[in-house]
Image (cartoon, rainbow, N blue to C red; front, top):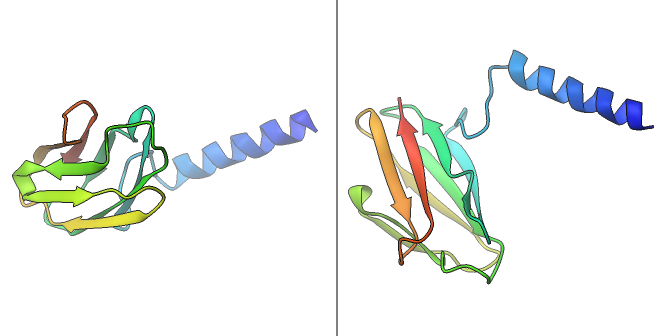
Length: 114
């Protein structure tokens, strides 16, 4: 049984490599981000310049100060209610890095725009 599980895991990794996907990369413009006791996960994502992006942010714990997502450069400030997926859509207009954080700036994340 253990060998079969390892084989399935390896197939999953190979399939991901073959399709060119990688963690934190937006293929369809939608990116799932969880807010956990460790902060925003994944903390870094990559998106294409000039295409709409939708962050789907779900806070999964009460043991965090990240009850809000603030991305000042895009004029975004959104509450993150516990257990609810919050969609935040914007279009990055130039390559570079966009930062976001909780209200207290204790937990943060980064969007790499290419």
